[in-house]
Image (cartoon, rainbow, N blue to C red; front, side, top):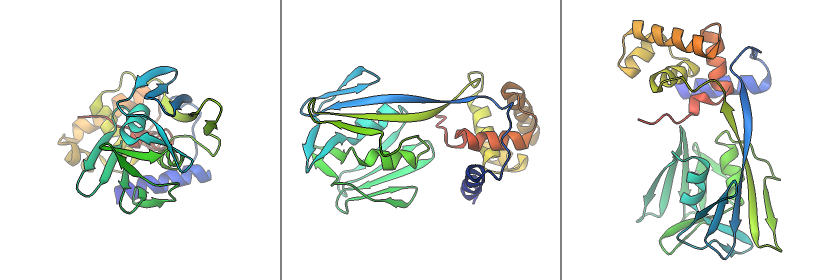
Length: 240
């Protein structure tokens, strides 16, 4: 139910029915470039070499890249669970759930099916997914990509992927608990509900809220809720 509220608020922002305040903490889009050299173990993140233990290869015209390589490059906190018997991988990027089902050749993001390009494959004990699918997956996880974000250079035998993410300025001072309070407010929870969820007193939640508003230079709870959705903070991975 609370996640549904987050989705509704996100939709309202995109449609322009919720006001966006000019004095909110700034958000900038940062683009990272990933490069995969086919026939090698070379994978670059912003020109920094990440040597793989398996080669990148071509199959049926698609560049095949290990699942773990790409997800952890985009989000170092991505959680990947592999069911060897069923040949199904479940990936968590923040609150986003991605399902990769090899036998059914199916990809789901938040229980919605993705139109799969090519075929998922297990090779030498590693799950590989055609690179073309990353644009479909990541856009559903609040990253900025379009049909031109993946470029194939046939002469060099390499694929280049540009992924945009939203970086929140002035968030260095926020504690993990403050981030959790922000996320709950962004999902429409009351102080009482937040207190119960985080095992805090309502007075402590109010104190955290006051601290967050001060640090982010926001006026009130409503601005904070809008800010949390607008910046993608509701889906930010916080850790334990």
